[in-house]
Image 1 (cartoon, rainbow, N blue to C red):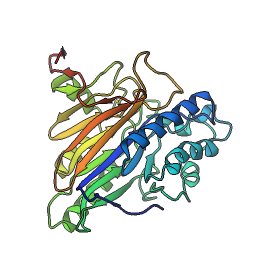
Image 2 (image 1 turned 90 degrees about the vertical axis):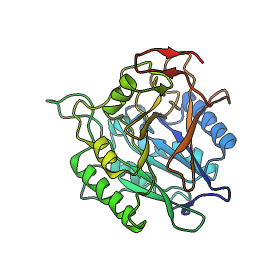
Image 3 (image 1 turned 90 degrees about the horizontal axis):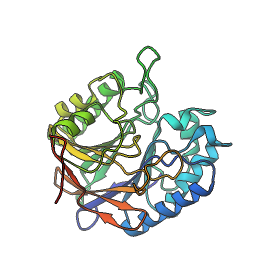
Image 4 (image 1 turned 60 degrees about the horizontal axis):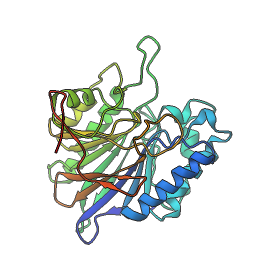
Length: 313
């Protein structure tokens, strides 16, 4: 496992979020994905890289375990600590999440954990980011958001109640160790919560929505649990390849990443890239921007208001 995470001498901690790589065993599109990832890592010099699901396109992979190792090796070779969560395309064919997780063990900079075996999913875990005093300053929650719901429900899976209870316990433990104060936290998973519809429909957002928000049809209360815990300042997901907006709802900023991989579907003219998140020690907020395949940084995305109007600035 890689070294412990900590804020740098300037009191900042930078995360690059890659999402939806859909790696297919080393085809030409994978080569383009690797070049993009290498460029982002080189130009941003992050303290951590996170992959929010669909690392591989399992149905297209002759060897899914080799493919997932190829995908993370791009980050490993850059010497950047990294963590991942799995999602629907990772295990659609020929492999389980546990088998994929085994493939990610033994990397020098890898921080991905299996998490408790007593709750739903593989890959529910927490990473702590230490301040310059050595104490936990921020926490990063990684949650297995599942794949598909039961046939009678249809659509995508929702985060289960036992996972939500785990989140509450972990949040409370962090708070207790912090003298009763909530530890500012980010949450990373793949499938957006139903509240992504709410924030787009009713709040000021920045970014684009070019496709339906493919969230679960059942709301199990993960967002409410985060609001009640009072620690989560931001959520970062993937899944919908043509959405990249961010908006704040009840004190939590809900963000999409930017599709990184060149396999699977894309929107023409919607450049591949990555989301960058920068935390500051002692602050319950974060900055975020996009780094695109062109090398451009997008610090201020288009604005969208609660009346559904895209605002020109």
